[in-house]
Image (cartoon, rainbow, N blue to C red; front, top):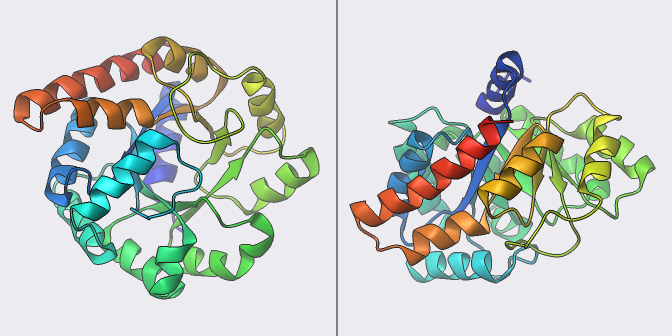
Length: 268
């Protein structure tokens, strides 16, 4: 498979000796037009990659903040086709790597192959499929590969070593290391054992490892960056953009918060 923007990004980070910053937001929150503006502001703040949540009514891996963001997006009229158009608009102005954080139901309902083709044509670089077990992924992986989309794989604290071995062999782009059991959401500190889990993964693959779930402050982001190749921040970013006024000044304030998180990661 040819190199995606994600592959090129991680290669550049490694060459420069930098850690990466990955930001999550729900596409369509507060609306699709504003999502374009927010992504561009994230890029200006120094974000290396954006995870766009594909809005779904039952996001089982998500905590309250991201569930509510998905609900707001759906209430505002976000659809699969609308999100693809949103990505296309971003691509008119940016080459920032972007992946979809998605669940299978919306993709299967319109046909998985057709969904992958639409995403690739819009300009997305890969998928993190939250509810697709590794053992059932083979039929779908071909559609990802044929559309030159990274298949980002999850490893959790409960994943045994022998299963990690199988998962990393089929992954592309990077490995998403879930720092703790449970759902997304800001925590007071990085989960105990996150360092050991990252080490277990790194001993089994040369793929970059991104650490996420629960990271919400610059201090936590800095600590996480010492463990992994990249840090994923979601709920804290969603909260800042939601709680600030939906105005240029409000967006600028939220983007400044993200910029502080980025600086903390880049200082490692």
